Length: 85
Image: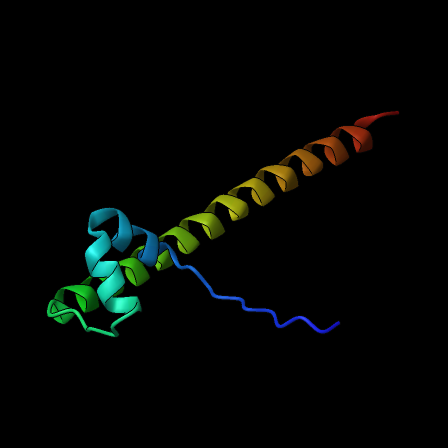
């Protein structure tokens, strides 16, 4: 018996649109009606991309900081081990 899989991706923006206005969500999904606030959506997308770069940079710096702390601790241990008679 063959079954046809129907996988549809639900994005966070779809949920947000539905929560804000389920009619707007339906118009976009079922009727393929396009929104009139395209400029605002483009601006929002750019803002999210900018925020994503900021978060990635902060994550990198945090990991670098942890790595430097680990390296400093390792050097301290090696220093004290070399001081043993």
